[in-house]
Image 1 (cartoon, rainbow, N blue to C red):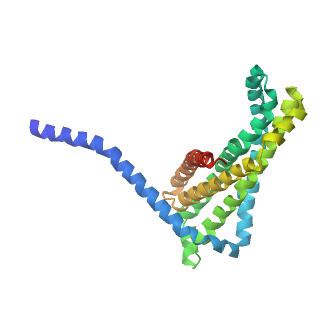
Image 2: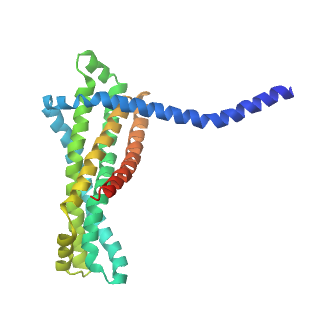
Image 3: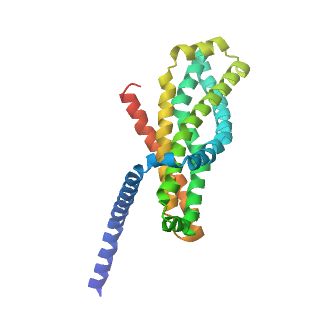
Length: 272
């Protein structure tokens, strides 16, 4: 009896130690399957030109549908940043640099990240839910049976539409946020408008904006791949659709922050 109890304890001990490693290996396996799926999907990207109506429809749904929430987010982001920077810069008498600091932070970091998060919350979640519903209701299987490549028909237009829409949303976010910060800074906080504009014109560069646009393109590609992949592989009925939507939003948001770090590090290394 003691010997059997000892073996049981050893099994539990090694099971406790080995379970995290098994979960880690399972994560690597799922990530590898995801990468292989996306590599096979890339060859279908050029075929989107055969479906211009689907592409434009997805641009309207994914991109134009986010304009309202992106605008609202940009307005209050710019105003809040102006207030917070003023409270810090005013202590050192360098309020004149608020304009350039806001321009730099919004165009390079806040614009791409915040606009991406808004797109994730509205469009990527809807993408995963829609594809998941089609999967569990066997509509995707019906498309394949009819001889149409469901990946080309459903996934590629959504990915390309997001890749196009998010950089444009970021440019719009930058404009709205910087404009709202300007009006708060010069109107409510008493900063000289000429000095505000002069610092931006003198210190700002076009590559500050372009770095944010490049980030947005990468972010759009990443989140659309994640959302479409998770939705396309949904199982488990209505409960599975809800779980896929949650998973797509969480994974996409985390991927944005991880990718933002590596892209920012690359830009710093390239001095760009």
